Image 1 (tube, rainbow, N blue to C red):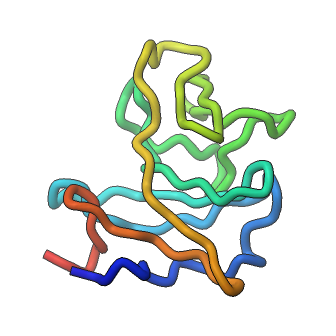
Image 2 (spheres, rainbow, N blue to C red):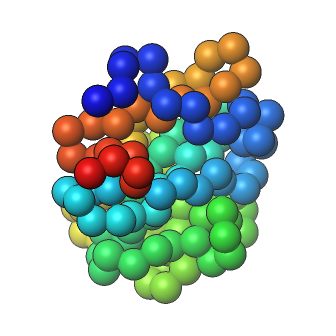
Length: 125
């Protein structure tokens, strides 16, 4: 199990405000899943790339998750909209469901991912 310092994910400079997300592979309950990290309102946030309505990847182009106004994460398949700060569903068929958060931190110019009991690096078993 990795230590609490986290696993290096990407350089902080790779995540421009409301720009392209950094995608990465994880295992959730031993199943491969894509996750993404992005910068929104100065904070790095990360979620599994799975719509709460139907478990499908949401980006409309690789690493592109925000709507045209760059205000909400939007599912390219169903149009469900999520608050980037919390992952909470705000519109669409996702009901009270939200995105599954992935714990990340940022320090010294680097973004780190912190695996959990149910989300592990794709290279572990």
